[in-house]
Length: 189
Image (tube, rainbow, N blue to C red; front, side):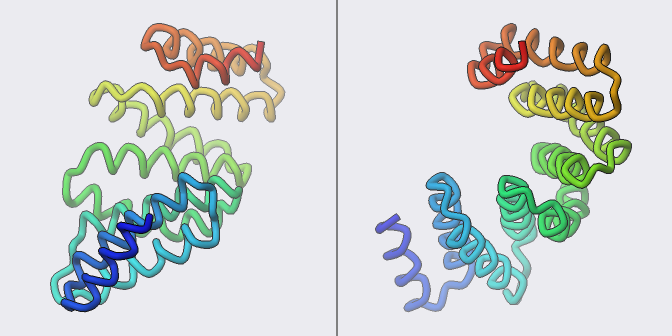
């Protein structure tokens, strides 16, 4: 973090806004990992504003900062705030044909809708994300989406379908050696 802050000072001194925006994104990521919500939001918002004001928009970094800020708001169960940033980055990832960004963005929009109790929208977005993640062989988020879908079906009172999604998540996590997801699934047993 100390090195990132020094890099930000240097970027400001040499008036290199693109570098400053990227450095603020890295600082926000460090605070995200430290579970410091206030500083995470502060640095992502500053990075987003720097990218927005640049003479030539760095679309990918702008979209990533929005995605990550949306994810932070999901972590603190603020889906309305999350959606502001996620919906802003969604068309950018699509236009850039950045499949990983698009998949995570779609999945996070689904999670936001799940947090809001909009189950049909949540499932639709997560299903779209799962298709892309499978093509990329990125299984970690798929396990998470399946568990959220299980929660949706528990809320609907459909325990059999909920159980099927939880077991599918456990099977995939076990098959791919995803220990964190295995642990999450075992808590449901």
